[in-house]
Image (cartoon, rainbow, N blue to C red; front, side):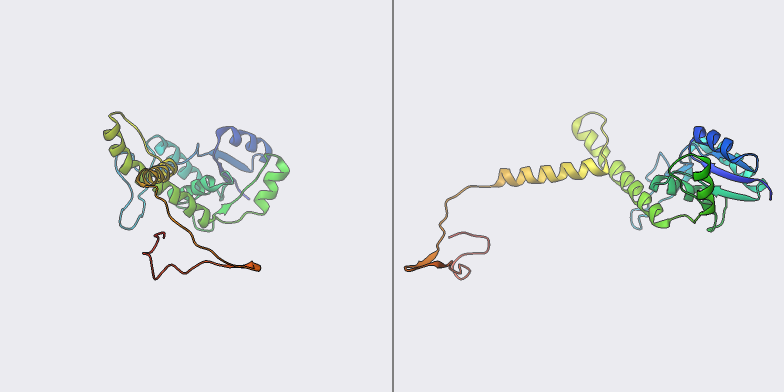
Length: 217
């Protein structure tokens, strides 16, 4: 068997894992994401919400080197972090390196020889549900950031950025505050029928024929 290329995220992890796996494996780092939405444009089709990815400006040389190593290797293993970001990085690597959908994807929780070798033995494929979750987050970041941030900055008179979480949370607070401000207090009456000698029996009248919806008597 020839050499197997293993791609992780962190350069420090790559050195450690290389020392554990030995010369049959070549361990290299992607140093995080290799592709992202373009910086100077929306990069998301607003009618279909489909993103357009480009190789990050600082990653062209790294990607070219990984492509070269992938072609020289007998096999490729994607061993990025075990979360949705790691799954997305693995998916982007698969695409930029022109790997098949069946490329081996391994996940591990500790960097020990036994854990890494067991992960390789139990290798699966890329979890597209996790990839979709990360992509949805990224698309929301871009749509909200690129749409709301300019309006927010213009209104405030200084450069500000809006996020997908804070913007919605602030929206809830603002809408609630507006409802409180619009509220006008007024007195109303309630009616309850109680029968003498029957303390456990009581009834409230049906007011629908007499008052408008959401109104009080």
